Image 1 (cartoon, helix red, strand yellow):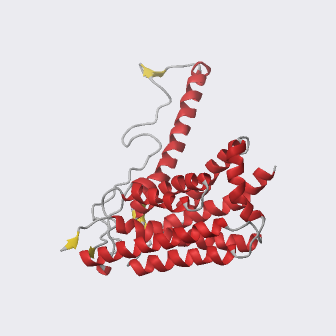
Image 2: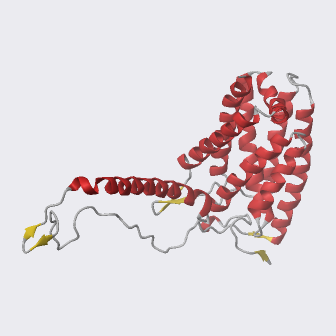
Image 3: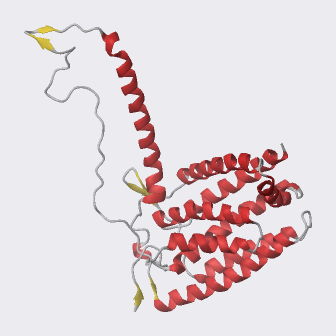
Length: 307
């Protein structure tokens, strides 16, 4: 008996990996100029004589229509970027037997317990303590080992201009946009002493250490977390509400860090990358979004709160 076909129930049939239905994709193109078989006239005519109008009378209305049309095109482009990455789910066949599914769940459960414990230890030591580096790198190692020990992982693809492609640019842009939202939030947080203090508790580890080493740790942990939470854990959940459940478990794992601001950030980030995982069926887009967001937070937030 096998776990049903689903988006993310794991082990992949190599012959059908990242497959998509054969329905043709029709692309409607906007064509400028008059319709075929018609003459482009200068204006309406009466008795063969063109009407003469004062164009200045209609100019304000034309400007408003033109501005609305430009806004509509911009919104359309934004939706066109977001839909394949966060909403439209590509077909794939990630299957596994019941025994493989159970094994994945057991490995994931053990990994999340060990990982949460290490996360709590890493944030319990004093800022500037050199033990912070091996603890956080050890945490990344736990996530990676647990991910690959649980079963196959997938990079994923999105539908772009009628073709399946690996998501590269779009998730980076999403990461930058998400970082922009957090930067606006940081400007508000710094004016509220309790929230500013909680945020400073996290940023203190970045300020008290070597920036290059902290940047490497940030990148490594971002990749490791996505391999586990949007890779192994997401696949172990099954077909029912994987985005919601994986986001909640990701936030609960950060509770061990003892900082509510960190938990809130995990909820927001987890939701975005969870939607990416659901849409594309893999971890590439979540990884790129996560590390883009993390690096922006590392480089931009400390100066904001220092000011």
